[in-house]
Amino acid sequence: MKEELLNEIKYDANGLVPAIVQDAHTNEVLMLAYMNAESLRLTVETGETWFWSRSRSELWHKGATSGNIQKVVEIKVDCDADTLLIRVQPAGPACHTGERTCFYRSLEKTF
Image 1: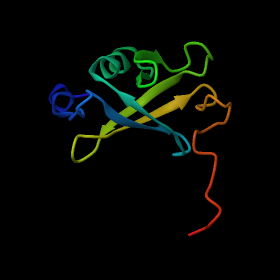
Image 2: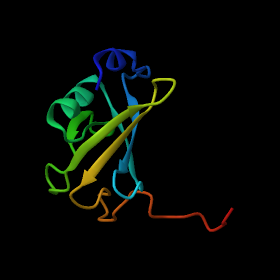
Image 3: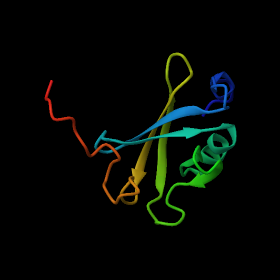
Image 4: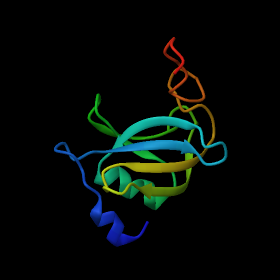
């Protein structure tokens, strides 16, 4: 990631930026998580996703316990620099429930 773009990222009042994780091959949205500056730095350095757990107030390396790591292919920053899109090669399910994506449930109505 370009250093000047890295410096443009706008973190919220809690020091977090939302990160949409997408399968680089299928384009399926796998999950939404949050990153702080340290987890983004670790992601860039290691080439695997790291996030900030809001519920546990700690860094977490996606797949560290499950083995379902996500190899980063590309990190994009939106036009306002307040949301990240992380394209990955997943090694397994993204969801803690075992589902491939965290977005496996649908509202009844089809629009």
